[in-house]
Image 1 (cartoon, rainbow, N blue to C red):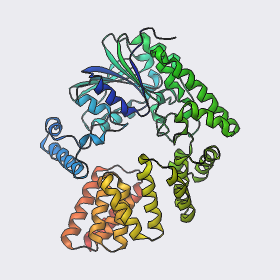
Image 2: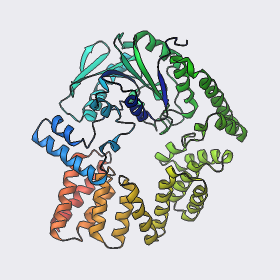
Image 3: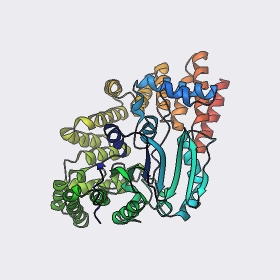
Image 4: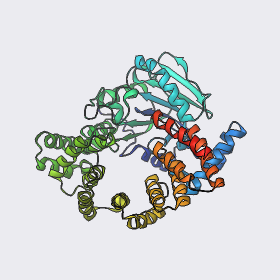
Amino acid sequence: MENKKKIDTYLVEDHHQVLDIWRKQKINNIDLIHIDAHIDFEVFNAPDITSAFYSSRSVAELKKNLENTLCFIEYEPQINKQTDIGNYIYPAMMEKIINDFWWIIPGCRFQLNKNFNLLNRIIKDKLKNKNVRLRYKKEGIFYCQAMNHNFYITTLDALPPISNKVLLDIDCDFLVINDIRHANNTYRIGQRRPWIIPSQLHEVLSSRLQNIHLATIAYSVNGGFTPIKYRNFGDELAYLFNAKYRTRYIRAKAAEKMFRMFNKTNNAKWYRKACKLDTAYSTEYNNYGPLYLQKNRLTAAEKEFKCILSADKNNVHCLLNMANILMRKKDYMLALRYLDLAKKYINKKNNLLISIDYAQIYFYKKAFTKAKNILLELIKRDTLNPKITYYLGRIYETEQEYQLAAEYYRHTIRLGFARPEIFMRILRTALKLGNDKKTAIINFVLATLKKIVVNDKKSICQVRKYLQKVKIS
């Protein structure tokens, strides 16, 4: 049923874009109701200097925070460049846009209780505070206090009536992820189904939230969290909260129907009609290929990309992803052909991606000078990309420039690309350097291994054994 109040409502593609909306609307100290399968809150690894001083609970923590900040500034002077879909609520809280934070998770209160330990781990991890612990506020609601704010976690069926002014923030993936244990984008690829529909969600929220100041809705198709076939849920919710979205909703429903017909028949005319109604249907995540690629299921990914290319031969995303598959298969000549095709239709946003792909191919074809020239140019434009620093490290290691190789491997690890293989490489380069430099690298690896969490315990054991060997030599 249409909301006659016509709540001020905004639709965004990626969830972190709502932060700019809140800033422009000059929101100040309003409680946030966050409807999402993901918390989207995380204390920055590198807080700004002032926050580091005031938020640290000990000298040791202050030292660690300042080290992280100085490390980040080494690559990128703007601290806010850390903002993304997984942490945008943190800067909103720091800027006093939001006050208390309500996270409404999928499912019912039974699942809430069942997931208590997982939620506790999430809170400790995202707040970067081991002393924080969730407590029962009342049946169906957990809470904790941190950073001078209240954090509540509950489900729709346990959400109490709230009369004070609130910000409503909805992610469409909430409707298709029925449990936070299944919130990973690669969980059961292609099998997600709605556990609640937009009209039901709207009905519950309208009955519980009596003073919605502003509503934001994220499609979250990018990244594969919301399957493209449920993209129109965002438009339906927007229409339910504000009638001005009626035309957009009708158009979105028609586009979804056309795209469904394309998936059913593989007839290109339906694809073109869907994209004409809504250009978002030509996005990278208009198929499950990128998710299969994440899981290294190359055959399934290739099938998905070729299906889209049969209807849209100039689709840059699919051409780049096909090149990626062929690189993994070590068919570099055919990969280059796909990159050359993509280059004809590339825009500035994707130009960086294609340049990295070219550098990778040249590297594996042993054209190191070509690869290095591209990468050195790219690092001036994107200082926070660990893929660039990784391949520069590989090239300098091949050229026996061990000091430079070690530096770029160190940057790669510090930028979050801390795979066991890279630890092995930086330790191998340490063996080629003088004692002082070797000791510095060993200390860096030791300190980093204490901080990171790696699922591949077997590989990490191998790294530790090799570390002992480097120490002895």
